[in-house]
Length: 265
Image (cartoon, rainbow, N blue to C red):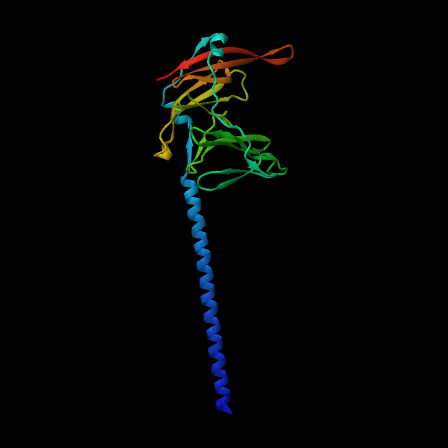
């Protein structure tokens, strides 16, 4: 009888040990899977981060040439032909998101609208697609303490690189305009708190063989004489501007227009 009890006790003990070992092995496998997933996510985030490039920094522009402008007539301004450079067809979308397909993957962006609460007015806006440069233009918008903030960026449809155009102010810059043969981008930002002030940035468009340096700061201009209504490229190295000053007349703000041109090397 004692022998039988001892045998049962031994079998029970071995069974418990086997169960504990199995549980440990399963736990190790689960941890290993979680670790693999975590590492995969980290690697994906690292890849995405590596493909994000900021361009248009004020301190870089300060070390580069400044544009100079001269007055021209309205007739001369109107004589410069404006060319279409962007496709503004609406992307695929549903009630909450719009979608952008690149050669790498399908991107999903939350639409810009008032979500209430802390999110308030926030989300992304699709501006269009540059077919010659293979770039999507999108703005990322948010609200904090009743102030609006924005960031315009390009998403390269060929390699998923993202180029954030650093703004001169709180909101995003105006849609960058490529020169006649896609050598440069020009963009502007009108001061929110002034009536005849703006900043203009010129980015050089380089080869995509080195995507991190695809866009580089080239020249800039800070104006205390006019804000920007419209910019039209004349050549790859010159463009004309329809500028204005806001004047308070008869209990309302009225725009007084002037026209300018610039040329750079």
